[in-house]
Image (cartoon, rainbow, N blue to C red):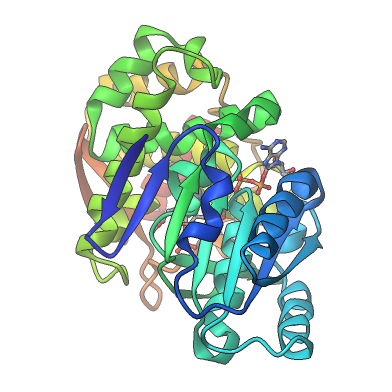
Length: 354
Ligand SMILES: NC(=O)c1ccc[n+]([C@@H]2O[C@H](COP(=O)([O-])OP(=O)(O)OC[C@H]3O[C@@H](n4cnc5c(N)ncnc54)[C@H](O)[C@@H]3O)[C@@H](O)[C@H]2O)c1
Ligand SMILES: O=C(O)C(=O)C[C@@H](O)[C@H](O)[C@H](O)COP(=O)(O)O
Ligand SMILES: [Zn+2]
């Protein structure tokens, strides 16, 4: 078992089979628990619910729609109604069992119910384990864009049960690698070395490097969020590749996996940094090489600039009319690029578009 402490506030437990430990972690005085899960994780959701009941807690499993369809105001409202009907109080708990979409939703519902009740996250995708479930960023989408409504609400605990990755479709596993590779580019280059040493292994949950990749990415996230929970500055580096990536997701009406969009977004950010004279060409090439080596996309359709730019202006890093990007000066040296010129933005778009 590995435990990563997030600033001493809560632990991320990484261990095969640890999802059965939710009941040990809910804390004293909890009478009710809402276990939120997607259809793909119904069996685990029900198992977690049963173990809570065995411990004398009135636990309820509630299924939500798959993927981004879960992250809507309507689904959050259904869950608030459920909590209200079942008399959930501030000493009760929400448990998210699923991928990043479910942990974002469950975290948001916990953050807003009675202005905040505890949440325990049981991420079941690679992306959920290394990124979404850790750090307390919660939220839902609106018609206008990605994660536009949300709150910072750290979990009480995060349980990464590596056994559950066995059923995750390969494309979803690979999508999670985008956030691991992101952690490599912004902070921890050993991650890039590990992926480059065995790219095929990096696409499988049973490779010799799986545990180390997961631990390193979680450590990067834990270190950053424990220094800057509310994204006043440092935390923005975790948004590397997300300005363009989130715009792709919105333009594609959330039919494209988050990790795939972020992979393209990182190449866009690297090309932008290169166009602005900040980043060397060989580091841009390393982005394409490492992402391609695990099967992630690095290009996007030409002719979509107007829609993408409109979506990028709604990015949370934007200030007034000033677009702001996280870019690299070098590997593990993230900086902000504020107000890139239209020429730089277009040069980068031309470089990623096909
Ligand atoms: N809050 C944050 O800090 C943060 C960080 C990164 C990403 N996110 C969010 O996370 C979301 C993406 O998360 P994701 O990539 O996990 O996608 P997801 O939640 O849509 O899960 C991907 C797919 O895998 C299925 N699934 C989940 N676990 C499974 C398992 N063990 N076996 C079989 N199928 C399984 C799901 O039902 C879904 O179809 C995005 O909405 C993104 O915005 C949030
Ligand atoms: O934790 C963070 O901070 C991140 O930016 C991590 C991202 O991987 C994640 O996708 C996050 O949800 C994006 O946040 P947003 O503020 O751009 O909506
Ligand atoms: Zn992300």
